[in-house]
Image 1 (tube, protein in one colour):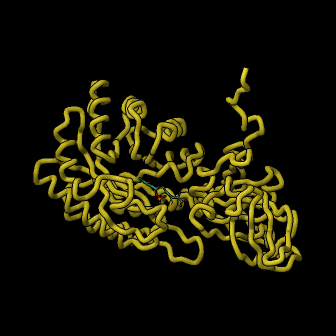
Image 2 (image 1 turned 180 degrees about the horizontal axis):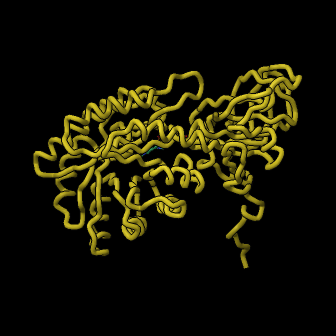
Image 3 (image 1 turned 60 degrees about the vertical axis):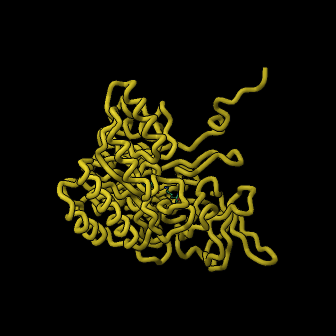
Length: 414
Ligand SMILES: Cc1ncc(COP(=O)(O)O)c(C=O)c1O
Ligand SMILES: N[C@@H](CCCC[NH3+])C(=O)O
C-alpha cells in the first residue's frame, strides 16, 4: 500500500508517480486515499466510546481530503471561518466541529454560532466576554471549552511548541480555574469542556500524559465546585517519522490516555490529530531543472521551492528526497537540493546523496501535512496542483493555479 517502489518505479498505491508528473506537470502534490483512511482508523479503532476525533483542518484542507474523512465520521478542528466553510462544503457536520484559535473575530463567532458548531475552544478571558456578547445578540448559549496552557515542554521545535508559559496559546494554568468560574457565571456561555494542545510533531508521548494528568486534576477540581465539564480535548501533536525517528505507537498512546481518564466518570475524550493523519500520505513531486557544480558544493536546482513546501526553510525540517525512477544511470552524488525562489533559505534538503540528472523527477516524501496549506505565491509562482490516488486511479483534487489567478482582484490606478 501507499508509497513504494515496484519495478524500480515509485508508486502511490498502484499509480506510477513518474507518469503523474508527466500527465499533470510539476510541482505536484500527490496523496494516497488508502493511507489517509488507514491513518484515521489507527486512531478511531483504538479510541474508546464516548469519543470524538476532530481532524485538524490546517494540516491539509483540500475538500477531497476533508470529504474522505467526513465519510469516516470525522469531526474537525478549525481555526478560521475559511476552514469552517471548507468543512461544510466537504460534507462535514457543524456539530462535530471545534473552533480553536487565539484571535477569533466577532464575525467568525457569529458564523460559527449560525452553523451550530459543537464547541468553541476559547483561549482567553477577553475572548470569553466577546463570545458571551455575540451569543447574547443571537439569543443562544455558546458551547465552550477553555484551552488551558499546562506549561508542559513538548520537546519539539520551538516554533511548534505551544504549551509553555511563554507561548501565546491558551489560558495560563495558574489562571485557569478562575477563568472557568468566570465562564460559568456568564449567561450566554455553556461550559462543556476543557482542552489543551501542547505542540506538534511530538515523538515522545510522555508530555501528552503529563498534560493529561494536569487537565484531569483541574477537571476534578472544577466538578467539585459544580462546574460540569463533560469533555477533555487533548489536542493534536502526534509526530511522524520524517527521517529514521521512531514515531509514537498510536494504540499504546491512546491506551495510556484512556487509562488515565478512567479516574474521572462520564468524561468524553477528544483529540485533534492533523499531521498523523495526512503527513505520510502525501508527496511533492518536483523536476530537476539543472545540476550546478559550485566551487564548494553541488546544487540540484528543482522546480519546487519554499513557496511550495515551506517546512525545510521555516523549521529546518528534514524530508526524504527520492528519485521516482531508480537506476537511471546517474551516479549518486552529494547535492544541496534547492528551489527557484530568490532566497538563500530556499531549499528542500541540504547535503543529500541522490542519483538523478536534469529532467528527472524527485519525490519529496511525507509532505501531506503542512505542505500545500502553507504554500504561497511568493515570486509570483502559481501554486501546485493536487492529486488524490485511489487504487489505480488518479483524481485531480485541485487544479494548478494559472497566471491569471495570480493577479485576480488586483486593479491598476484609474
Ligand atoms: C489547536 C490545535 N489542534 C490540533 C493541531 C494539530 O496538530 P498536529 O498536526 O500536530 O496533530 C494543532 C496544530 O499544531 C493545533 O494548534
Ligand atoms: N506548520 C507546522 C505545524 C504547526 C501546527 C500548527 N499548530 C509544521 O509544518 O510542522
